[in-house]
Structure formats: structure tokens, C-alpha cells
Length: 416
Image 1 (cartoon, rainbow, N blue to C red):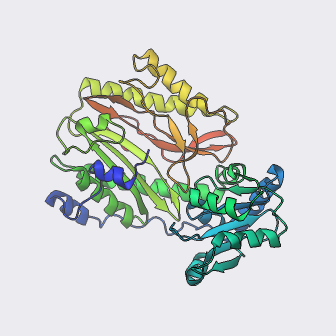
Image 2: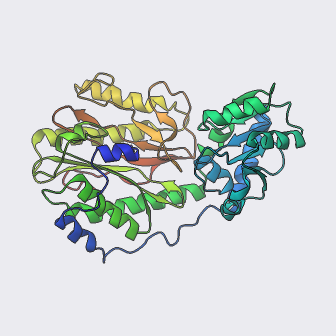
Image 3: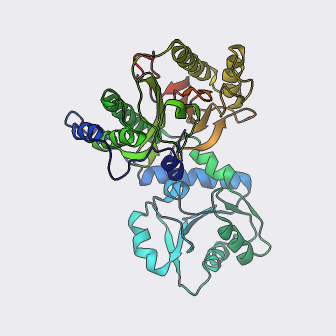
């Protein structure tokens, strides 16, 4: 489970300019850590060529003539282009046959070309021109104006509206059968990068955990995780730290928090390696845990194992959530999403984005297949008291699910 930067700020989980002397001292003690990502292999041209071939096969199967993709993870996935979104259109157009194009402002072409990782023409537009007319011109050149145009699901309305205006009479459809049909199923190269990201996060946890002291704030702890993640060779994706009662609310609270002996520390952190993310949560008590804290922690650990066992090839994804939620109800939690209990889905897809389709949530009929990757985080939350979330990600293989990070075995050894 991850949170936006705004949410992280509200939860007090991003380090401010200054933080406690204890955190500064611990952050400086990084000599034992060495980078572990030097052998990570970034996605190359051959892999991207295979992605484009698969996308074009799915376009043919679904009767789609071309797909338009705005900047973001999908643009990076197919083209290698790293770009931010603005009011000026930069987009890729993948035709059902032949090489894609990148449409971008004239003055941006050299910068766009720097990260372009596939054979593609770059078609530019000037500030006074309509970029959507450029897209229409490409489709006209490719004789695709009579076929549906697919739009990647995160594209903004202005892009959809612009294509409506430029392509009067052309059917505009969702590109989900194409983009999801590619990105949901990770290749061995992608799995390897996700494994490396998980290794970084787990190693950062192992370094940070013994350095947490009473009185530290969420920002102090986040600073430790950040320092360790970077030293280990990863990029920080997010660090959400919830202390005491704040752990009862999955994304925290804006109220001031400090580590207190006998209270819960919930950490939800992720790293990024060559564009692929990890998402791992750990919950422990600073000092001695109460009987109630131990009981809930044990229930969550068992819930995680039930979810993992239910995640078998061919099973509808929603059944994984059902398996955990139904068992929790027999223990007196819920029912359904009621508190105390599990107030969110059991898991989400993960890859280049921290949250990707599909989810382990009630009613999701998509069947689990090799290459799919998910978080497994059936947390339990007791309003006004504390919450416990253990989160590890897994991927589907021909033999069933396999962990990226192995869950911890006990509250006394909570990192794993």
C-alpha cells in the first residue's frame, strides 16, 4: 500500500529539512551498507521490441488501429521515454503495424530523443499548431482513420477531447485490452528488477529497525529508510511511517506522532530499481508487546498466509480477498469492511507503478496467470488503538505464487 506525496506529508512521513539528533547520528552510520543493484539489468531495446510486437498482436485481436499513450509508466514501458505531463501534448502513437511515432513540441525533440529506446519517428508541432492534427496526419498516412483509436486509461481528458475533435467520426475506445494485456504479465527481466527492488527495501528495513529510538518522529524514521535505500543503490519510492494510534488508520493521520515504548510502529516503504517498485510493510512494537498486540499481529500473519495459499493459477483474483476476509469474520473481525477488521482490499497489482491493475478485491473475476504480480497486505485495524499491516509482494509462476520478500515469522523478529 502506498500513499501520494500529499498524503505522506499529511501523515508526517516525509523528512523535513531538520530532524532529531538521534536520527542524524544513525543516518551517518551507513558504512556497513554497500550498493546491491550493480548487477541489475535495465530494460533494453530487445525487450521493448517484444512489448511492441505483443501490443500490435493484441491490437489486431481487438480490432484497434492505433493506441495513444501520454507520459507516464506506459510511455516508459513501450518507448523508454521519461517525460512529465503538461498542457503541451507529448505522446506516443503505436499503430497496429509498423513503427510508432512520438508527437512532441518542436523545442522538446532533442530532450525526448535522449531517452527514446525504440525505432520511432518523432513528429513535432509548433506552439501555434494543433498537436492532435499531427496525430491525425500520422493515422491518415498509415490508412488507419477508419479503425478505432485506443486511448491508454490514464490519459487526461484534454487528450481524448483533442482526438475527438481531430478525428471526427473515428471511434475512440479503451486501450486496456492492449496496455493491460502487456503490462499485467511481467517477463523474467521485469521480475528480476522487482526482486532487486524488494531486496533493497528489505535490507533497508534490517538496517533501520535496530536504530529506531523512543521519541523519534515519522520523519526521523523515514530519513533513516531513505538514507539506507539510497546507499543500497535504490531510489526511494515512498516511506509511510505510522506510530501508535495512527497505525489504526491505513494511511495515517496528520496529528503529531513519536515513538513510545509499548506502542506500535507501522512502516510501509518501497524502493525503485530501473523503474520497477517494491512495496513492503512491517509492524512491530517498540519495547514489549501486549497480549492484544501479539494476538492481532498473529492473526495478520496467518491472514497473509491464507491469501498466499488462495492465490493459485486460474483462480479469480477476488477469491484471494474472500479467503482472508471470510476467515477474519470467524475471529470476530468485520464482517466485510467494518472495523475492527480489514477496511481495504487484500492486495493490488504492482510493477512500474506502485498500484497497477488488477486488485485482489471482492468481485474481481480476472483469473490469476503467470507473470501477474501483487501485494499481499490483509491488515487489521482497531480504531483508537492500533493497526497491524504486514505486506509482502508475490508473483505468479507456472507452479503457483512465489514471494518477492518472505514474510516475518514473529513479532519478536518482525523484519524477516
